[in-house]
Length: 542
Image (cartoon, rainbow, N blue to C red; front, side):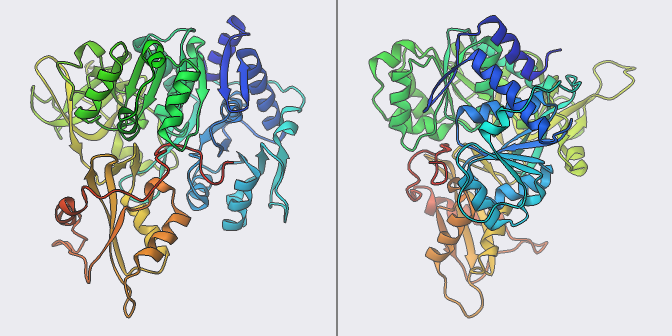
């Protein structure tokens, strides 16, 4: 079985001069990317990285980000892609939780992190892709990207396909984000499966607008490298930038989440894009029917793939384009290499039309949650054996999502078991928003709830009470949250109450609050976020 970085190596040997990565600074061929990965791996090893050590990468979308991720894997390490829109408190949590030994970032970001977390969460070394910032040096070894790439060659450590390749941090139903552990086998099988049903070839040019910290976003990179396609990296502030790039770069494939599709559907699609955009894909939430209709009208020759995925299993289902007319609200069937079950709580299969939990079997099932055996045991559990007498139980991912299967085997999403809020394509833990609200000192009680919203999927509303003797101060609360949270996590509004409702167990009654607030806030537009709901281009990434 190949390793993920070996797939890139094979592609570079087969087509060295083909375009691999394009960013705002230019284009790199496959041979140049492969040389960069090999040099980055040597440099990381020279910094003391050992097999299984974690390498965090906190960068905007640029070629160094892809090279650093693959270089960490080649060095025998574990890549930890960090969303560029996260702020220092969230990054510090990921660094500490993962035990990252090295951070690859920009000098300004490193400075922000050092001011917020003086010990830099125990990092051994940092690598900056630009000039060091003036001022006090950080409390760890810091080298320039060019220095990293100039290290002498190093022998790659022994690595097998079941070794960990990456940690993808995703929010849980409570508390801070958790790291999903994916092996080389998971990611290689995923890349080959997705590229097979999308029909990717070396002639494809894919536009990467989603973060590489999002498994769906990283898939644009891994599937392209698997077949020798070209990837164009884009951080954007306005949806018009996406449209211009589609036209200028003659893009053949675009993956996005519903909030991006809602924005793009209302723009005028240039005639050239209609002819060369071979397919589009949607995941991260259901695409609204009206948006799907607009896109299909604007792109009559473009194939539409509606998909569903779990970070814990990379990708689970897709709806073939020829089924979209008949089943536009379906998430399809299992992708190649996976089996999707719909089970009752006791593990028995549901009948057609009966709601049950989506359970994913197969080679794409991840290894669990990093450093969290309790939550791993909750989500990664055995399924009823399909082979009596099997000596060891097979672990599957119990998604927590409720679906139903029709008589033809197509799946339909119903809802989530947990309290997650999916907004702008991101899964957000209400508890994380609440913890930051409490940290402001401007609220006494706080509950974050997700309200259905036509553009965002769900918008976050913070319900709060003011501290004793203080007046409610919405602007101060939101200003403080903007400093500590990425834009997609900042609430649309703050609803002040003298006291928050509680249930019989003394817990805040979230369901009641959702019901009470749904009609009032459903049409509220969030503050201006630059319309780049998934852009990694924020004020720190110039």
